[in-house]
Image (tube, helix red, strand yellow):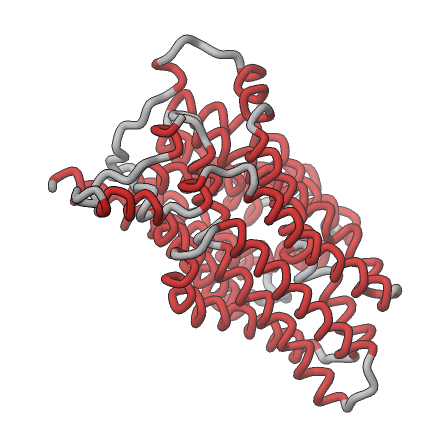
Length: 432
């Protein structure tokens, strides 16, 4: 009972950490470009480099973060990431030269990138196979809520005519990260087996083991397509398509983004019970079909011959359909990554999947942005095919999963069927 209460208390603090880290991301990142290019007067080139450095820093540190989480545990890595992000945020607020801005953005990007796999691994350590889907659904819900609230408050604080308003913005973010250090330092994560307790393995050996896991490799490929075809298009290709092909206003684009968030907030827990009872591979396949419909609706919005009001409504509906798919994915994909990881390797698996996500988010805008702006019909057809590809990859992945990995509810049902209490769900590791 004490162990259960301890896990519950730890999970509540972890969820606070998820919400506040997402709040920090939404609080400042949307304003980085205008801050560097206009407020600091460093030009569009430097502003573009800042965003590139932000992404590259994440790609560099994530492979190292996975090994550190395995060796040291997620909490020390998270605390180090928070301090690094705080230094980066404060540095951005005070930086007046291109070198200082780029250095600070690298620190902030690296810190924020490491937070997510560290927090995800803490969720794994504080949950069971039976409760993991709900825990990750809550994480996704709070992340979206944090991003939305952060962006809203940050937008009201900044004033492009006053550097001091941005200095205040980044200083608040830095203080929030340090406050989060104090909160998370009180978390008592249940001890989990670490690679360090077993015969030593090289980092190369850890990656070789991961790449030898066929299901994890297939899930990583699927994850890349998921993030490339959806998240990588929201603020690049799809928004460019909306402006150029659909002819929507910036306010309508804001409404579309709000519709996406609103759908997630409303649908997340409404669909959770249904999703938990289904096979994970089939749910991901259904999401691919939902997103295929979303791209068809987007095609109608930009390529059809209806009124501007109908086109705008269809475009907003596209973002809402993407939100429905996201709500179905959150209790499905992240828990599956955890269940595929061998004992003590959840940190490396979470970091590897975060690396795949980061790569997709870097490539997605680079490919989708120019296509969405000028090649309207090919853009829609391309990403419609990618969505159908998600369905195919998901069904193929299902053949690589064990019955319990694909449908964790089976573990509890088997225990109950034998007359026992469902208190110790069978894990993927136990089957191995």
